[in-house]
Image (cartoon, rainbow, N blue to C red):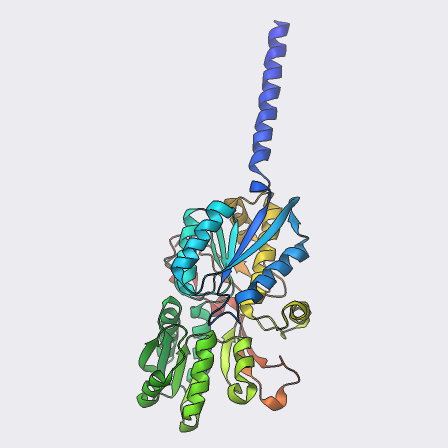
Length: 407
């Protein structure tokens, strides 16, 4: 009988040890490395505001974190999706299936972001989008593994329209990039223009990376609209503004409004051309001491001040790694649970919060381009006119169509 009890006790001990080992095996870092993929426009119309600079932000975060998490190395890889959804999707599939990538960030271009987000969601991989703007990403296309980190077309359209319409911009005509991002930006801005008593006289759509805006500008000019809303970004916005100036549109009573503008766009245009322009941003390098300290370190590497996409990529990566450390594993479900429970406060965001729909909400900023006489340096381009609290800037959950949101 004594031997029987001894054998039973030994069996229980062995089972407990085995169970403990199995539990431990389920924790930690899968494949012995945490791998982050930066998938963005490295060579096209958005490459200056994102591109290699976004990867620099991610690599800085990894280095600042110490290069390891839970005792395992962190690896960063990057690729150019060329602003083509099929290339983005194929690269993401290769990364997830063969490279064992754990998280994909950047995703500048809404068509690419939507394709990758769906694929990654199906494969239970986290996406932290810092570059794309379409609100579909947190509405009908949301997944349990997707985060929309920096801005969206609801916030940029709302804040900009609320600044422009009351100051005489009652009638609008849109020049719109003809894909998911442009459509979303035009629609969201239209909604707020109309809510404030304004009207939209028409719109015209152009292919991505258009070099000649003459026909689109002539249609906008002939509409007689007080405001020509540019529902595009990057090189397209720059070209449209430069050509409008050549046509003398700004001297004939019409005003161009960029609905998604980055510091790098203003740098390219120059203050003589862009002075007085107002737009909405999720970040500005010269906002406070913390942003300036980060920007100084970033500039030393990239030789340009960080855009909101590039700064956001640093913040997203750092908080992703913090979540892995807190969860004790890189398992996507555990990491997402930690991310959604975290207070995100750093140089990029103050008391940011990732909601059930994946939207990271944080303060947004109404910016104004400085006059040349106000600028004290090469990158002293903007001033913050107004800080818009997160609750006012972003779409409320009551309006969300994300199936993950409980109503």
